[in-house]
Image (cartoon, rainbow, N blue to C red; front, side, top):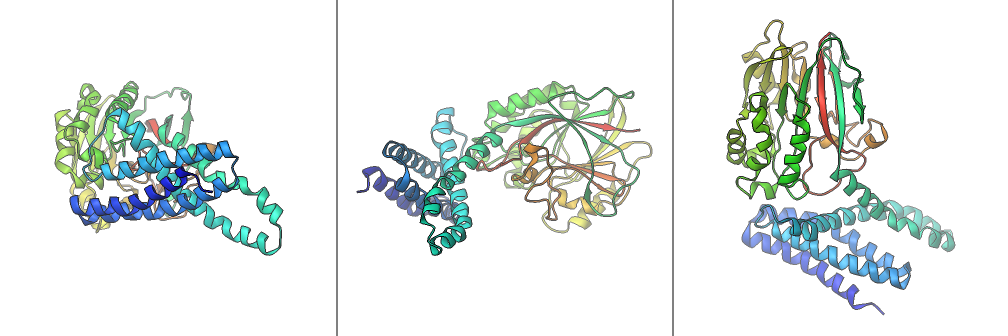
Length: 425
């Protein structure tokens, strides 16, 4: 006999699947209604099937606990998605009681559906061969998506503190390829004879439930404590919640006021959804926004030319090459390009830029970086995912991100809290 909690869970899932997209359509419009429907379509089937599977073999006390957890997180997921119909940054209590467990439910449900599909051929084969005992022995595999979701939450929450040392190059690979980089985690590198250019990059902070104002302020304070020569912000500052809370980003960026003369920023793709809010937040803290512009800065290692590229969806080659020709290289001056999406790096003329700084990919989000390996799900794609890449003498550094957008699905790819040292031999 099914417990009352099981019926409550199923009814909550049904009500959320119908109610949230309908509410969103009426209040916010078709775009968010479709978004909510897709998120629920990806997560609910796996969650419902996995709920039934777990209750079938867990001990009675464990089954009751699982029922309670499923009901609570299902309700939280529905409440969180409904809250995004009128998005804004919420209180700490709402984040921890609704947004965090709700998004964790969505992540775990999505992973469960994928995992069950992957296991289906194995289970079908064992059943056809009559190995029912083996099937019973493999029940523990049902817990794998939840273990992965837990690891993902922990990975998503923390940032890896690193010092990254990049050397200005004279040559390199004929096509865009990963090249070795000096990366120091949890320790400082040996000092150099000549002082390098010290850069703090902040990219994809995505102010929202997983990156509230106080946490972003704290992370910025930790970064600028390194006394960098330049602080370069490469876009994607907000989430839906951040966009719905005017003034929040300005407060989060306040620690940069004390180094504002060294701070320069560009727009990312999400910033074009709320450009006035981002522009106002930067200006109120004295941070210069570069929209297809250049600036030459006097630093402790000499002048540095920074060219800031706006984000464009089409015509990347013409945009980047036109921008760089409009602001030509200056003799004897280090030249940096801020480019939110690293896909455009391949269009930078050879020898025209010493170092391009990008974000956008969140490091690939799923991979083996936590284990010291470079592989991610984007490794075989056309996107440079994270770390250092070369194309002739050009170099590209793709930051793994100061945050992430939406759901906690960083698995094996932690965010980055790094100091970049650019070394000119």
